[in-house]
Image (tube, rainbow, N blue to C red; front, side):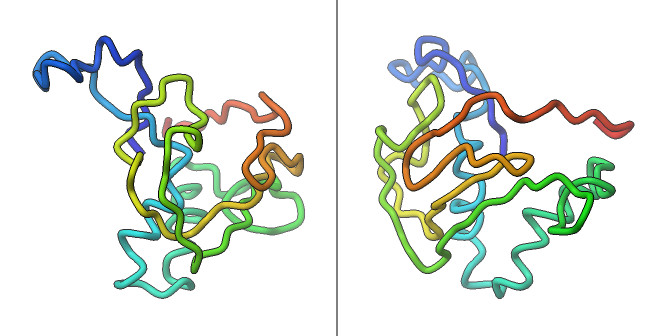
Length: 141
């Protein structure tokens, strides 16, 4: 996702100097809709879902607890409407620093609910809980 939020001052937004700018974007929350927007004309929903679930879990070595809806796995879930589109405005950005390349973009696949380990943290546009997740370390990350 290249998530690397930083204060706008070190992003060199006014100068446009990419050589001096802090790298990365505030974009983690848009991984699902941005990816679906880019790939929906090329992949079916059935082909897309593993790209954002089981395959990343396997890539980082967490396939025994993440990436599937299965008994004993972490209940990290997102409920979304793949057909619904949304133009992103700054009020939709949950990161501390609001600079994001997705502002003004029309993204497909509106997220309605997010649960982390079975606890609903986001519901229909509002955050409900904070810091319920855990850091996942494997031998690959």
